[in-house]
Length: 462
Image (tube, rainbow, N blue to C red):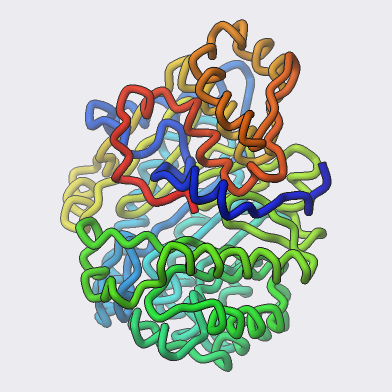
């Protein structure tokens, strides 16, 4: 199946537009348990070389601070202008880096690093330098690695981009969401095209290998015409990757969203029209549909990895480093080491208290069972490659696929009839009409959803 071959079918999308996980992990984070704590995580950090295997590392650092609040945001963040708070946070990140590195068996070589938030570029230049020094005290960033940071163009100038390049970053992700001034006012994120272009031009000047732009559809006051203008401007900026996220309006879970008027949100049909427009414009411009809400140029590493069967999915979205163990630092961040996941505490007070006691600030986690590992490999294959070799799963996990997944195959029968996928003796293949709905297909293999059909906590598939 060619990269470009996918079909947007509004009727199918309406039919299968259920609430569901994004599968940045399986089991999903809401299945983690507090019985899995700091000692359990340390065990897995200390067992990385069992069997002579030494995987490379991927590091994630969560910077929770933002200068201002964006009403649509549901991330774990702290709104402040006080750099005393970030200076203290970096000091404690240093403590966590030391504790995790001390427990880590095997190589400390890092192939991938990502700063997320909040707003990582909230940090001053000195704070950014200090944090990178702390990381490199305990880990070795390999030449040719993928080192990325999320950037808020409203607070970044050319000198800051130069600093980011100087300390080692070579990829950046820029939040744009929408360039329409009325939409920006409705979500409290006023951001000009000029300041966005300045950051992208500076990134190219200082040698960044990859630039990604994030857009959101479904925001208040959005419509097809206004979003088409935003796409005009974004395509002129010529990013290497684009993400187009569905705005999930969940004001009962994300308090800032209460400031968004539901009456100003586009209708479900209007949202679909905006998405359909975006997909058409991006594919006509030559971008490859990677999966879910991600697009990339054909020569981008994500597109290459997908063609070569190496694409992976983790907490930062799609990734090219499937084999890496992910160590995460900072409040609410999630690690994946061996057959385990764990998540840190969510508040600064809990985070500081734990580290003052010399204890890793783990809130909850999970050790995967053989069934979890089996289902995770299936969901990964479907989400990343739109196909699954039944034989490879049977060999790797010592099962008879058709009998083990009899109930799941029965559940997928309606999707087979609807033209979303095919199932034969050797392969499950997601067809062009099913690619936009791959989350709904993956959900059939989620054992936890099977026992808990209450899906209201998740965002819509589209």
